[in-house]
Length: 346
Image (cartoon, rainbow, N blue to C red):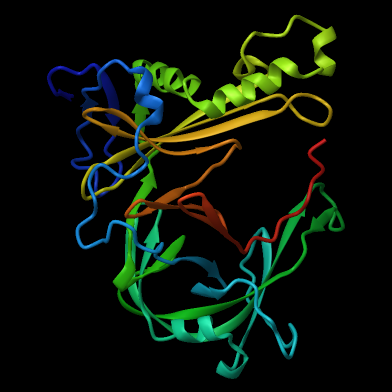
């Protein structure tokens, strides 16, 4: 193990990918962070270093979702208006898949203007650890996916979600392999990809400082005020903890890294209570780890998760399984192509 000097806060980096280094070595990487000042929670949301060639206030670069329908495809219309309906589909469901998948070619005349404009565009396609292939958006297909969930041992023990139809383009691959990809970006407007890194371990000191910074946020205090004013059914069973984040709560930490620059983001998500007549509060905060401290990038009063984060200047996109949420200022744009089996949260 190689240790860099003066490590007050540390991330343990395990070598398990091509972008990590020699697989025989574990390296300790640290950030020299000062004690948090009261103003840390109000840190600017702009990135510390503006990516080269990106204007300071760009429109968010499109993050295009992937579907797998016999081959990797890029979604070019998540909510198509279909003149001929969803008919004539060929079954391309994979064995043991959690969804049924069908597809058929779709004529250019059935495409919307925005989808048609994407055909022929060059894209960079990303997987869990970064770019996996470069390709051109080729033939359009109508793809329908239906989630299937089994809950017993009998053939009839299953339920399904609502079918979800999208228009997706096949890929003419220039280099790499697009199998296992999660999203794509137009080549000429690609942002920086921060991938979720399960091989990075957060130090206890940095965990404590992140939680301290969270409690200084106005959003945290707004939830605390609602918690203190509420009348919850559990209040008669035992004395309530003083802080909402300690009430039947769970907190998760996740680290994301941009492979080329080494820039690292920390997401902390806290949820408390079960709702359904009981208290429920949730807060998700994203910070960038810098030499001058924790720089706040995003705050949401909800429990959010993502497997990938894409940065376009000051704008962020959060990619999860089958969905992408893009933020510019206070505005959100969500594209969701999932078909899920619904369960009552209560």
